[in-house]
Length: 229
Image 1 (cartoon, helix red, strand yellow):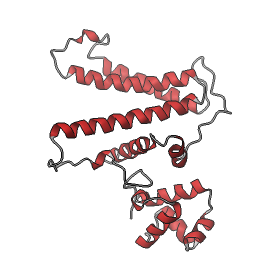
Image 2: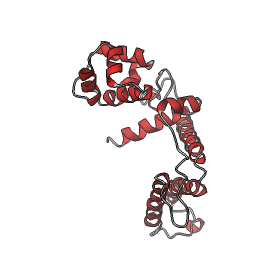
Image 3: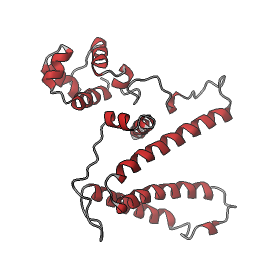
Image 4: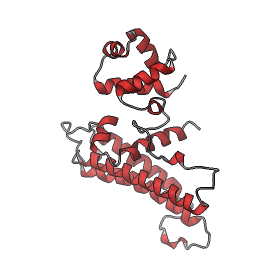
């Protein structure tokens, strides 16, 4: 049983605002059978996968969680060959990987900050930036400290303390972001206005950020696959 198919067909139906009964009628099956498919209780035929793909205008690979791109046909990081070196020199392959990862991260950040800005909260932007900068600092310090000849004077936090200090700061910043988005006050700052909302779905993301949506959706897929290991 494909673990992604039930989640994705449920998401697509809810995005269309369809009840299970209406979706089942359109797909030519019973509502109880569609319910079983959405819960992962029953496994459907390949013909039904194709029918669902046609109905929601997405690719079969998207339905099966093989790509975050609904229409398929776009390069993703996992498409870079690992063993076939006939088309890429090692240096060229690294350049492509680096460019793809940078684009994925930068585009995802652009979407995150654009949505956060709509909530008109300076402290939210500050705390989101804090979370990200703490992670960047961590990676940079690992890189910098990998060569013992690099002078440690660039950093003010001692080498035996920085990891624990940053871990604690990251937890606090993440908690502040979560509380702010849940409309709770943080320290002396007021809660975000409840009338301001972030309304998102895969369809909205693709419509509003056509040039960047693939990066964000790939980021989500890559992170969730990493957690499976």
